[in-house]
Length: 108
Image 1 (tube, helix red, strand yellow):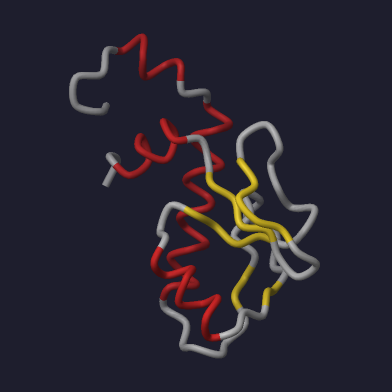
Image 2 (spheres, one colour):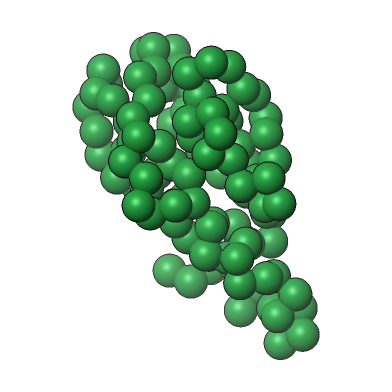
């Protein structure tokens, strides 16, 4: 539970948003341990997805500077939960539901 959050407020962060945020973070954590130049796995909310994304050194640096954003393959965006920040033919950068991301971060 977030500081000052009531049980009712906690229940308003829907289960799907929370699970998607948890899956984004899990996959991003695996990518954070990869060396520069390595292919990243798609950080979409589907744990079965093993698609890869090739980033340039600049893109990789930008990715690591923004831990609340996730890099996914085009077509792997959870439209009801994720907000698209940028999209091109190789990847989309998404930001998840803010309350769900905070809720997952507070679980640690």
